[in-house]
Each structure stands twice: as structure tokens, then as C-alpha cells.
Image 1 (cartoon, helix red, strand yellow):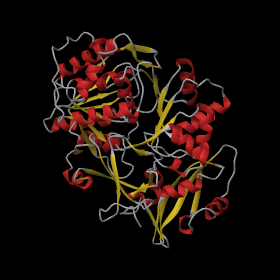
Image 2 (tube, one colour):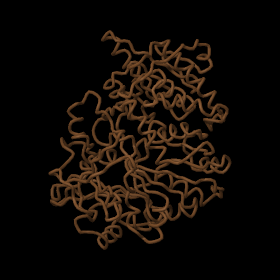
Image 3 (spheres, rainbow, N blue to C red):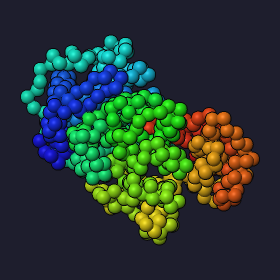
Image 4 (tube, helix red, strand yellow):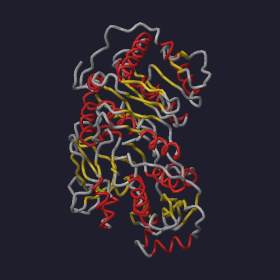
Length: 529
């Protein structure tokens, strides 16, 4: 089995640690050693082969954080099939789109809300004389339609092991991972076996850990947490899997002596608020990796007081295996001690990533000038599934065009200013929503905020912010506007402020601006004004 593939690396990794604990699922307290994990993966892979899964089959899965997610996702890879992971919080519309767009042959599921959608897909394919098999996982208290194959892990143990699984080559497609799609419909990002293998090597450089580490993952394993899971298992760490609740998170860190975790800023804020009310020992943590957005300076100070100097930020993209830049622990501490602006950056390029910032003519911009972030790495996507047109737009001469607007400072820190498509044009001026949010978030009453453009006959687009305040704290719209006027350009000052108890989040914890925009733009043909 080639070690130049993710299949080869993970097969070899799971044979290195044998009796060492590999995975614990907190809800059931079930633990599998590396030997047990490998044996169960091979057994499930044999079952999938018996159903007809083979090299090149497209296998989608809708499984919440669980032991089953670990086992079945790895079994799909073991078979040489192409994985299509889907978040269990995806809407039925998105799931229907992904199933059809990805030409899914097999579905593995453990969610109730998507049953009708998956069944419709099966029946639609049957009318086209195409067969789709659906496996409904037992143990999730769900009643699956009779068209599904309902089976438990215990029943799978009776399946006879196949003698061997197909060997993959570096060029074979390992995964089609659909973009989060905060604008428009998702795109299928194709990653090769070789690309995923290169990403695993890169993660060894960027995420130091070994067989003494205990890694807690509570965000969806379909996303960045899943990449960290593979890194942890490849290095012999003990992975603890749960769904997020602030008190249970802190309790697990204390009782299991967790050393590494991954999260997002909104979750960090909830942990801080809970820790203020209840005392926990979190001294075992040595690395908290976070991503999706910069962290508030004030809240980071609180977080470091609670956890110590253990924070590492990452900036990534589905198309680049989520490994683009890192801001390390030392830089977090240095920024807090000196008041340096680079705390609002996403760090510096990863060791295996090359980054440029270019203008509309394709020329590199100067320090502090804004432009589009483009990058190269050995683990870039192969392209968008069935969309050569979008692929040729996104990848030119080996460079991936991220669609993010960024700038470098004199030290080489990268700042993401906004998405190209998320820019607000108000009164003829370009307003970068992230910069407005940075100003609003400086207000001591603010927990978090989101800035969008709202169609307006006078301004074109009205700079509008949604604000969540600290419990028991009051702030008026007039006060917020005056606060911003004192700190930023007049054209960037919000024209309208809405106060909310909470903001809608995407399944990976980002503020869902598409949801915020929906009511304002629903009657518009275009999303610009």
C-alpha cells in the first residue's frame, strides 16, 4: 500500500500503537485501542465491500460526532471509495443538492431530519434505473424507512473479512468536500489521495503532538476537527469526541487532563463565560487551536487568564485542506503585551504554503495594500467536481485564487479584510465589513457583531450591523453610532444597528451572514445594489 496516499498513511499509522487507547466517545464512555479501532474499521470496510462499495464509489455520510463517525469515515477510505462528508446541520435543500451534484452511490446516515431527502434521492435514481444503497446506523434511536439497510456495529461483526482492499494511487480522488456556501450553492472540492497525504505531513509540522497527548474534539468532525483527528491518530494520541456544551467541555478537560483541543472564537467566549461561574482545573491544556475568525482582543485576554498562553490561530479554506496560515502562541502573547495590531491577523504562511496578494491586474501589491489572496501548496484541491469552468477561474498557473481580500504588514502577518463578494458599496465607497466589525467589537458592551450591506435607494447599500451585548448591559443605537464615528471613516460608520440576543451560526460556527441578509434581499434579483 503506497505511503504516498492518505489511505496508506492511515493504515500504517493505526498499526503503530496497538494497545494504546485511540478514541473515546464521551456520551457512551466507549474506548477503542488502536488495535480494536483498526479491526473494527476493517470489519466495516468488509461489510461495505459486500454491499458493492469499491474503488471510485461515491459514498456520502451524514453522521453526528460519534464513534460511528470515526469508524465509518475511515472504513470508506479503507475501501478506496471517494468520501463525501456532510454536516448533520445542513438544510435539506443543501443535502439534496450535494447528493445529486456528487453522483452519490451509497449513503451512510444517522440523522432524522434528512431521511425524507435521502429517500427521495433513492427513488429519483430508481426511476433513472440507477441503484443507490442507504445504510441507516442503529444505536441512534431512529426508525429508518424500509428501503434503508438498518444495521448495528454488532451485526457487522458477523461479516467475513475480505482478503485485501484496493491500493490507491496519489492521483485517485480521496474526498469531495462541499464548501460551506455562505453565498450561493455549495461546490464539490476534489482532494486527491496524494494531496491529503501531503496535508497530513503538513499537519505534523503545524500541529505538534505525540502519543502522550489527549485531544478533545467537540466541533463537527466533517470539518477542521476531522483533520485534527487524523493528525492525532497518525501520531498515536488519544482522541476524545463529544458534542459541545461549555460545562461538559470544562469538566472533560479537568477529568481527562486534556492537552489539545480545536474550537472557534464563539465557543471560546461561551467557555470563558461558563468558567467565570464555575471553577475548573484546565492547567493540562497546552494547545487550543482555533479558526474561522479572529478573536476579540479583550476576550483573548480573558481566555489567556483562564487557560494560559496556549492559543494558536489558523486560517484555511476547504480548497487548501484548511492549512494556509498560523499565528502561534508566542505571537498571541507578544501582541497582548505590546498592543500590536497583528492580533487581528491570521498569522504567517504555513511552512508548505506560498502566499501572494495581487491587484486586479495580477501584480503583487505593496505592504499594507489590499488585494486578493492567492496561494500555492502541495495539498491544493484538484478542482471543483463537474465544474471545469469554476476550476479554471479558481486555479491559474498553479495558484489558487481564494476570493479573500487581504494585506501583509511589514512583519509578514496576513490580514483578511473581507471576501471579494462580501464587500459593501455604500455611497460609491468600498466598505469592508470585517473592518466595521473590528470597530464595533471594541465597544465594552459588545460580545460579537456582524456587518452586512442592506439595499437602500439613497446609499446603494446601507452599512448595517447586528450586535449581541453582554448580559445585563445596555447600549443604544445612537451610542453605538457615535462610538464608531470617533474611531473610523465616516463612510464606514453603521447607518443602522440591530441588537440581538444571539446571531445565527453556520454549522462550523461562523456567523451566518446569508441568514442575516435573507429578509433584506429576498425580493432582489442580485445581491448587490
